[in-house]
Image 1 (cartoon, rainbow, N blue to C red):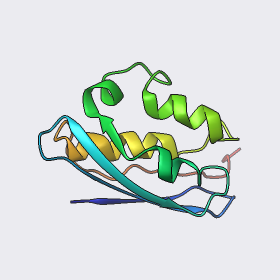
Image 2 (cartoon, helix red, strand yellow):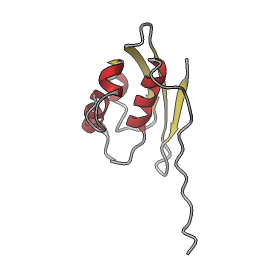
Image 3 (cartoon, rainbow, N blue to C red):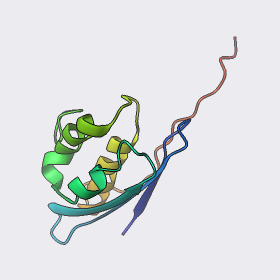
Image 4 (cartoon, rainbow, N blue to C red):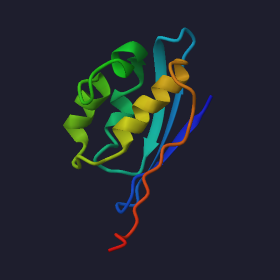
Length: 107
């Protein structure tokens, strides 16, 4: 079982996501977030269908539909991290770190 740890950026909030699956389709989720906006998702998002999440178009998955209810920032990386964790738990993708790196323009 892998744990995804999301340090969301300038807001400073950290979210931890744990996903597990016995059958490669239904995925159980446990996540804890410091973000007060996403906090209600901890109780609402406890089990998902991996195929519905991972094969939906960007923004159309059930995770993103729920995130729209609570998330106040379009660039929040947490919904994407939840889906990446679901992929890993369902063995639809191998675990690999995802990074955003910001540098000053060299001009």
